[in-house]
Length: 249
Image (cartoon, rainbow, N blue to C red; front, top):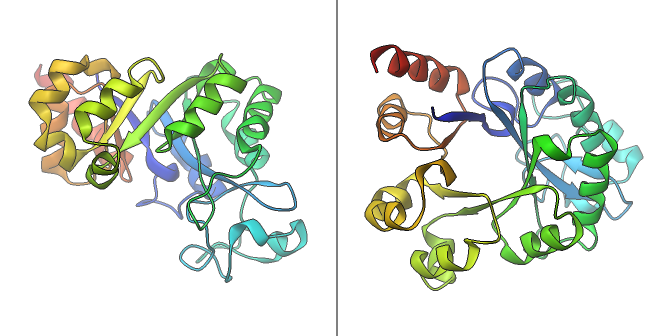
């Protein structure tokens, strides 16, 4: 059965990476919840996708420049919530023992990994007792190498799209390099479609994830193919279609 992941807490349903979204997505039958983590210069792990504030928060500038005081004043767009810390999010998700967490470790606005973010994220996951329910995820294989070094007991997931695969010397070369580094390879659906024969010759379906699927036709296509994992901004739709697929199987 294809496992369904709520992307950024289900951002087509609720404000992305918000505590409201994380609380509500737990009421769905999703198998996993995905979210993003940055590190501020003040040492806070904060859950937000972009390296800058403008798109999703009522503020300006780099996320890394946030202090705890300014973070407490800035609201997520369209909400009365501030940007949550990783601890805030884990507090919400930890009690849902049937949910897996996909914790994406982000880089700063220049694309540079934050020093010691891996160690800090792994420590926080361990503090909540979530090691065996979590994946540490990144596009950057150097970050995932650090994850293997500092937190070898936490599973890993790598993401790749067409532009990133080209920078890595092509998808075939990339897949060979990450085969023993990660448990799951998450490939953007357009690249997966283009390279389907190559990918399925190289990897078993249960190690493959495709993202980000929000269109009914696309979701049905990948469910019918039996992909191992499917990430969606509309997890309610993906779950409804999965249920229909299972009934008709």
